Length: 622
Image (cartoon, rainbow, N blue to C red; front, side, top):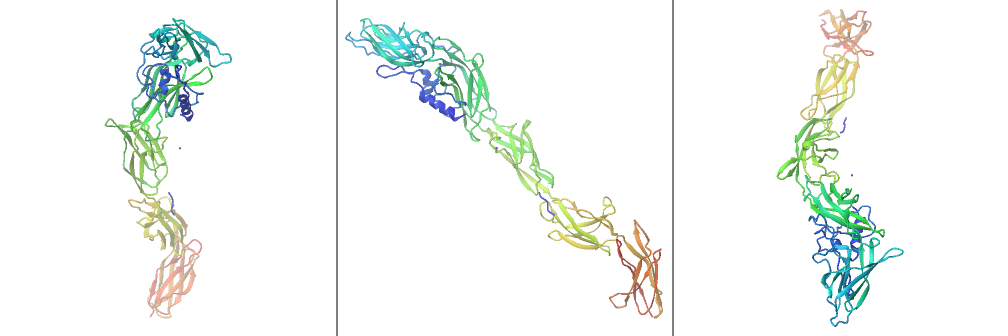
């Protein structure tokens, strides 16, 4: 018998919309030329260094996505250059914070003032700058700012402009801080100017300015410089403040939810001082990723109900993948059929020229056996199913993209398994007949479905089927493993089984046992005489019929014994008569001597007994 043997497009779109929809924070002159706020340049000007200084940066956009994960980051990522501890813009200009004078005033002394660039001070949106030229010295500059939104837009007059660059005849004028503005938002600007000749002019809708709080960043850092098997986490740190252009105050941005995108989305909240320290484990994009873009951002709510996406910091981190190897404790194993295959060893990775133990690596063997390396990189894998024959198993680092270590190259090792096959013997059919012949039919095979090459089977017998098994002899099964034979057993009562000694590749095996309960009989002391005897005289046959009881022979009385004669030179037997044994099993029968021949006494069994045949006695008749 054979036996057998698994952040988001919305943010990307929002970011794209923010960049496309970013208002031109320009200071348009009457000729249509414009300047631009460096803060806006940080997210819209490809040639700009977005964080050369920690000035406020923001880009208005639509309503924020639930998962602010830019798939295409703004051109000009924030740099890693440290920013000043106090980046609040000052009330005085430095460098070239304002547009150059227009140099367009008429020289004949009859012209009114002419406006050049008008807009927010590039270094501080709380100030308004106006470029003015005239045929005489400009003596006064003022502006009216009208809210662009609201049911009843307010208009605020801004006066007190002072010359900050150029000359009174051709220069740039700057307002005081516009602390009188009623709220944050966008304002339509009308400017007016008068010169010493008494000429004056106004320019309605000279520009539009946005006066809103701006984020200020300090101490920004993204580390490490490279992601590898020993540096799998990214730490982002820094401090965020919010600059109020109306008041000129800078305060910590406390309790603000920040979003980190590093393959996966993460979030954190700024501390009371506006600082943040975030530790994340990036999700690499596939097993062959070469870099991971990291973005830190948040959203600012605008007065009009929209929100502005603010990119705090970003960096693309290279990914280094290290070679790995698996060292098995044993490259081969020998097991008996029925046992499970186990493999143990160490998984290691190469780093700085040294092989080091790899902890937490997912491994598998034959798909169904899975484990994770522990301390020292050690692991043990046990295959849950029984192998049915010799085979080779592959121990490998997991190929599952969710389990595989993206910082390690895949590796594998081979485990050769030698199965000592089980020998199966079926005592399928058997019986003992009245002649004490044991008939045997059955087959032998192995757990691998083959017939063992050594087909020798031993017949064994035991009185109780538990102990005392003795081999009575052996025979060889056919090439297909079957057998059908018979043989005489001297004791037809007890238990029988078959046994195979096995070999180096096949286990020894036993068949099922069978039980028979026939009783052996015998005729002892049989004699025919006298000898010689004269023809016509009497031949007397005697003997005793016995049966086996336990280990002793006892009288088998009251049973009929048949006397058979075989004449000299003949092959057939002739029954001459029968006699019933007495209570002691003894019998006597007399016949007339006619010719030379052989005499024998026979007991023909009934029930659970077996036949008995006496000694053959030859008598010479003269």
